[in-house]
Amino acid sequence: MISRQSFTIAVATMLGIVSSAFATEPAVSRADAERIALTKVGSGTVQSAELEQERGALAWVIDISSPDATDIQEIVVDAKTGRIVRVGTATPTAQKKETPTE
Image 1 (cartoon, rainbow, N blue to C red):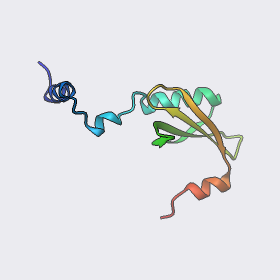
Image 2: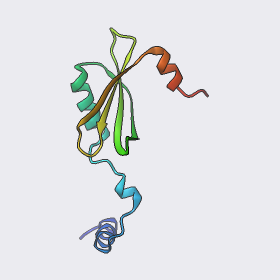
Image 3: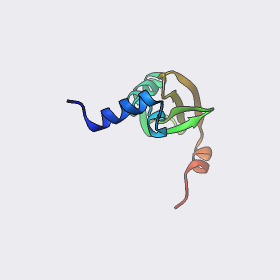
Image 4: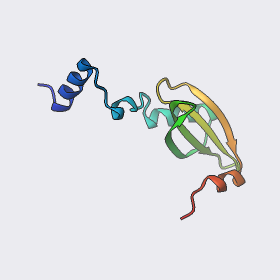
C-alpha cells in the first residue's frame, strides 16, 4: 500500500506539476555535506551548516573551526552532487560582520 504523499507526488509528476518544495529538496543530506566538508579540511568541529543558493544552485555552506586556528574554514558543497564548490577562510573580523545582532 502506498502512502497518500507518495501517491500525490506520483500523480503530480505524471501531470508535470512539481511543487517548489520538492524541487528545492537537497539530494545531499546535511550530515553527508558535513562529512564531505570535514574530509576536505582534515579535522575540526562543524560550527554551522546552512542550505543556501550559491551562484544559482542549492548548496550547503559548512563552517568548520579548528582548536589551533582563529579562522573558520567555509566549505561550500553542492546539495545536488556532493561536489565541493568552494573552499574559503573567514577571519574573526569577517565572522563578526556575518553574525546577526539580536
